[in-house]
Amino acid sequence: MKRWIPALAAVLALVLVPLPAWCTGRPTVHLSASQAGAGGSITVTGTGWRPGALLTILICGQSVPSRGLTGSTGLCANADGRAATTDTRGTFRRELPVAEPPVPCPCVVHVATVTGAGADADAAFQVAGHAVEPLPAESASGRLSLPAAPRLDGGDGLLTWFGAPPSRTLVFTVGNIGPTPVKDPVFRVGTSHGVFAPQWDEQRWHGTLAPGGRARIELRVDLPGGAHGDYTVSLEYGGRVLAEQPWGAGRPWGVTVFWLLVCVVVPTAVFRLGMAVVDRVRPRGPAGRAVRHRGPRLPGLLPRPPGPHPSPPVPAPGTTAALPWFSPDTDPGCAAGADAPPSGT
Image 1: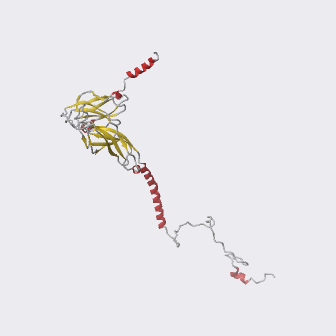
Image 2: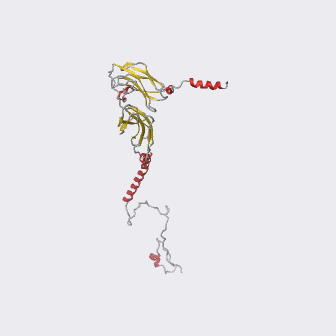
Image 3: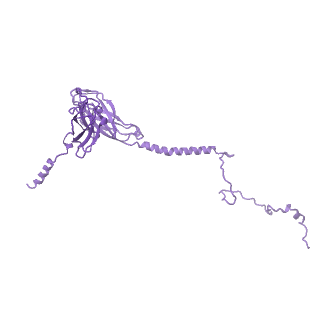
């Protein structure tokens, strides 16, 4: 029996230790005041969020917490919104300036994640002095939900490696959880890079979803030419973001290789063209060959170029080569006294 006591103690410790708030349920939002006038500020706190999540905090009109944000963020005071990052326990605290939304109240403070798994929460809030109008009647049309996360199919080709627009196919399954059929639903597919806002593209799916039915839908997603880096693909229907999927686009290295070749080939081609022009305008000799201008040579001081050279003339046998400054045949004095005997004989 004593051997089981440590095991029981360990089990009780695991059961009694509280789980983190973000593992126990839906994230929540709390306000320091339920009403304030434009120009003031309130403190927004939250628990149960994913640790390290980036959040946006907005004051939105035509919404109640039970129905959430009934439209897109165009119903919110986006210019006066704030961002917050949750700590390791999934909590945050942020001051929010009070501003009037572009539509009448009832209003909420809407908090939603920016990246990663989608999550949002609302808290009722009244902007003092702002108009209040009844909410539009909720439509009895069907509602779509995603039972599973979407995926991106496809890959990059040779043209994409040279800067062509990357393309993928967003594949997902939707189910109609409403009481009436949904015919030809229009989805919004958005692509965002980093912290920039998504660029939305509306695409219609042709078909009818009966209540409780499901359908597999494929939508095309394109990025601009030469796009690379980390992107996020968002799927929206009825003013609500249904899912987000990351997309890592590769760098178009073919463009880099092309410009490297241009920087090498173009200067070489210009040099060869210039040399051809110089050779064309150079003066020609009698044989049609280009004349090369050489400097004067000093005989005996500079080495002779290699190759055969003409030999000096060889005198005939029995003759003596005459010196250039002495010729006995042309000297009159020597000619007259050639046969005279020497003096004194």
